[in-house]
Amino acid sequence: MSEQHPTQAHTGPIKNPKQLLAATILGFVVPVFTIIALAIFAGASDTPSVGSANPERAVELRIQKIGTVEIRDANRPLQSGQEVYTAQCSACHATGAAGAPKFSDAAAWGPRIKTGYEALLHSALAGKGAMAPQGGGNFNDTEIGRAVVYMANAAGAKFAEPAAPAGDAAAAPVATAPAAAAAPADSPASTAAAPAAGEHSAVAAEPAQGQAR
Image (cartoon, rainbow, N blue to C red; front, side):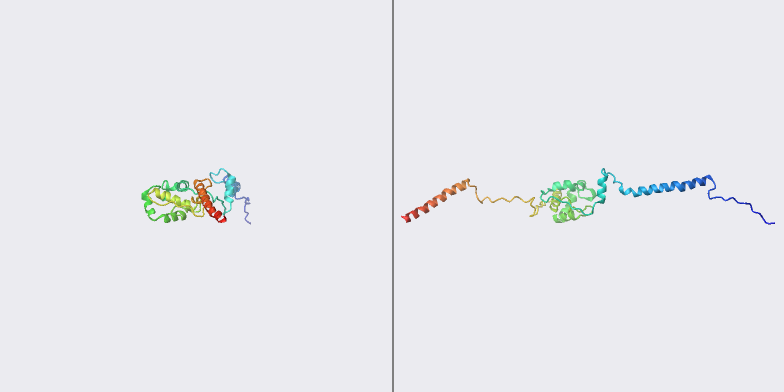
């Protein structure tokens, strides 16, 4: 007699409710959250930076060209050393932040003053240590030099404040005529010279008349 095997029911991988729940989560919930995460990641570049009150302006700043052209008024008056210090240097030098020599601290400025004005100006323009280069910013080299002199002199130096370049029409003094040039017509000198000239002409005229006779 041949052996007869009982018929086995065909069953799938899910055999109990727990497996069904797990399959449901893996098949539906996980893909949904994956899609949401990808959407958030893709739209993150359009999110304005923290503290930006104008999202449109923030987008413009992110997509602007690397090189920009800024037009400045070349005829503006040069700023004084105190004005440049207040606007640009006081953030670090007023408190001594990031190792900067504190304003009017003679002990901190002493070794630096001994190097001379030119060395201090070079360090300010090119940068030194934690200080970024100050040249090429809102102030020109002469104004940065004035700020250097202002800070150094407050700590005991005797540097002279740099004057405006010779070609700077803004700070150059207005040319005036010498005092000994042409005097006004109604000045005492001109009125005194007029009779004198008349006398000489009269004296010169008398011999001429005598010769004519």
